[in-house]
Image 1 (cartoon, rainbow, N blue to C red):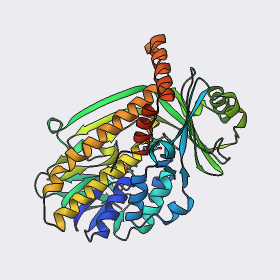
Image 2 (image 1 turned 60 degrees about the vertical axis):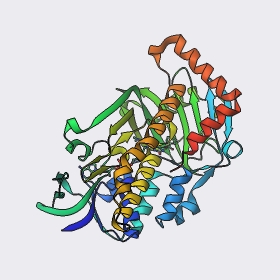
Image 3 (image 1 turned 135 degrees about the horizontal axis):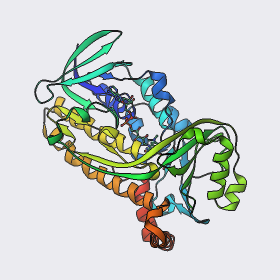
Length: 385
Ligand code: RFL
Ligand code: PHB
């Protein structure tokens, strides 16, 4: 087999890249280790920046998103029960949209016309410094695809970044001593907008997927197990971290999904190794506090797609040469914001009373300064693609 670009991974990054290239007449094959149902069963992000909304439109995959996505004009931050609403429309004249990553993935799967090979095992990359080719196993047979380029969109635990010889790649990492325990429930959201809450017992987030489906998270120690949390324990703990009115309004029920995600900040540099390019979680991870991971994956592939299009259609190598530097500038700014918001809202017992007072001062500065609020809103809404 032959393709111009082989894309590894059919998450949002791989599917979006494949779609943008297919619309430009560039042929791609996507190789995905899991089944479509497995990919759609992963409950992850929920908030889309305007740049991501626009990109879904460019991919001609935005119709259902525009019909079902919920426009959010603001967000609430609460610190030890003191509440502050940030009005995005007033501060920046923009908004975000609540539309689940699962739905983004489903819509991109539905519009794709080119080949996606699911349940492709043992994907291996060869000669990406010269004339690249990729092998994989399916139904007991080994297959080979020759290509011009490989796009590594295979997430944090994928094979692409791991295939780069260590001396060629630099990594920067911070792990946090906690994770998020998330619960999905078919109950109306506790509020119209998202609530991010700091509390001495730990961080909590009230999010949503629709008018009848809610998503809640609480900070838990890194070594915690989801099985240790039955629904009653989760709801009691969540209530204890919210201000009394919100806790009172919370509608609970049987969870339909419950899982723990570790929190990590991570960046690999550069993003190009010969004819191999990294994008999305394969190249970087942010803690989910700033709602940036999915959006960053999509902004990476928007830049990468434009670079491939310049290469094939305009016959210019400049954009492919510049992809790594350009994407990393935006990535580091999103890393900074996600790290900052994580530090503001979680509990870090090791920083002691001094750390808690600094967090309080940060919150008071934010609530008292329009300039600080604009900076928060500018970043939460998303820097330009
Ligand atoms: P993905 O989604 O991990 O997809 C990678 C795909 O590659 C496949 N794969 C392989 N295929 C072939 N061969 C191999 N060797 C392979 N190894 C892996 C995998 O099966 C998979 O299908 O990466 P991608 O596309 O870069 O997308 C990134 C996003 O998924 C991620 O950044 C977000 O989910 C992060 N995130 C959030 N982002 C936001 O923008 N807003 C949010 O509100 C938000 N909330 C979250 C989040 C992530 C969370 N978790 C679980 C980490 C909330 C949570 C709890
Ligand atoms: C979610 O709804 O899953 C979600 C929303 C906002 C975040 C993280 C996750 O910051």
